[in-house]
Picture 1 (cartoon, rainbow, N blue to C red):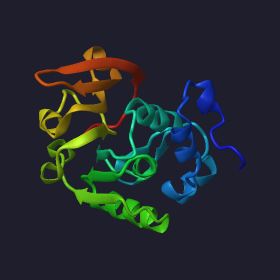
Picture 2 (picture 1 turned 135 degrees about the horizontal axis):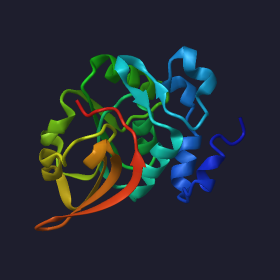
Picture 3 (picture 1 turned 90 degrees about the vertical axis):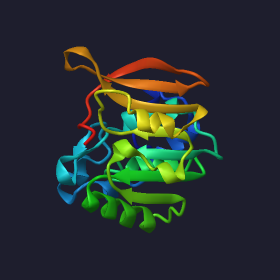
Picture 4 (picture 1 turned 180 degrees about the horizontal axis):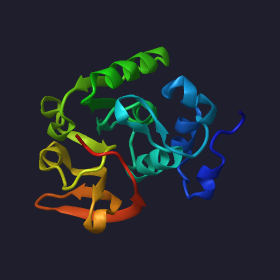
Length: 200
């Protein structure tokens, strides 16, 4: 396939580094064998432990919204398939990814090692607690829906840092929220309507 995900520009993704990072990954490695025929479709796919790999557009959009710098230290909550971590690893300096399901974490580590990503660290545990001993982080990305802003994660974010997460608001509607941490407050911006699995 010459140009995977041709729809991304049409959907509004403009960051060339983000596009290159996603298109350079063999997404079929990150999905179960019975879903590999659908690996390059713009749709979420089922993976182990009742979780999903997000559709390529959502991965691209969330990554683009973080405005990553090559020197950034990034915390990812919800390793899942490892696809989002592999995108981040191409755009930032250090990636710390937390997953509650040991099976998923081990699978993701095998795939990312196979692809020779050396700047990703893995932790099995409760994502809502973050990775305090490695804080502070320049950016935080949460890949499962929360019902409130996780305060422990905000504490692990640098002043001036950004966090993106899906948040369930009224009427069971989920929206991507971009949070910016300032000295004495946080700024929230509501982005897209989305559908994510719960943050456990």
